[in-house]
Length: 201
Image 1 (cartoon, helix red, strand yellow):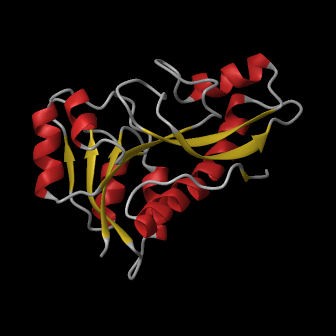
Image 2 (cartoon, helix red, strand yellow):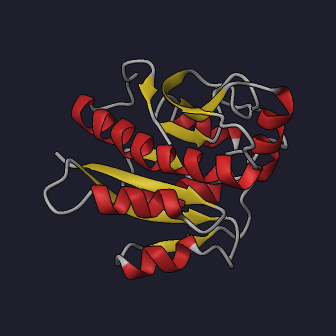
């Protein structure tokens, strides 16, 4: 039975694209819905190009609106791929252990409220950390606090810039997120992958 996936996005949707490319015909999982809190999110156009239904949430904080869309499309797994808002607590409760998020750092470091996008990579470089990477974790009621399912490690290089590090981490995200979704489809639920998944520049 094919796992039905909803992807929530706030930005251009490169992780959504990576999922759509991986989950082609015959794959054990399929993206059946894209949700966004922003009408100008580039991910909405990517969804349209692939023929995937997409909607902009009128109120991203309204659990009733979330649940209406998720139930209408019979969603089994929710993937947050560059979604920058908290998922309403009632949605987390209804889909407990069936919502995953990808974060552009090695959690628990460099996570939490306000830690997204360029800010994460600036913080990593400012800390002097020798490596960064990507983390996929279960979603709970707090930013970036749920159980880690998988990580991909990316070395910090001499003279790195936030943009350079971001590009390498994003490439790791594009491999890691589809791997976690495929493993979830095989198991019928999100499961940890072997740690760590190494990634190189």
